[in-house]
Amino acid sequence: MFNHVMVGAQDIDQSKKFYDAILGVLGIYPGHKDSDVRCSYRRNGGIFMIKIPVDGNPATAGNGSTVGFKAKNQQQVEAWHAAGLANGGTTCEDPPGIRHNGKLKIYLAYLRDPAGNKLCCAYLLPKVSEN
Image 1 (cartoon, rainbow, N blue to C red):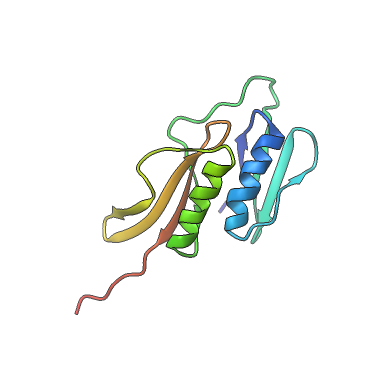
Image 2 (cartoon, rainbow, N blue to C red):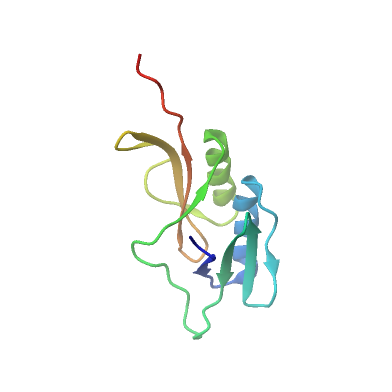
């Protein structure tokens, strides 16, 4: 569905350090800075980018916007959250844990990156059969 997702950044090097850490936990290689204002991460045909805004105004977080990353298990969600906190991110929402979405149970964590963008890491818990 998506070609790429891009979020604004104030400081590409600071943001690259943060994203290298949290995305590294998910098995994504360090970002590639193709200029002083942009860095990209590629995986499975998708691209995630951080960029200093082209209009010269400060980067701002979109109210109501969240970028969600997929984890392989609950431990990876916890490691993602810890890596984010250790590299300039701040926690937001509730602490990492299980949330219910109808019949689904999702283990997730939320962070804000150094520029204030809201991020999520989620693992869909396996359904338990009701016998």
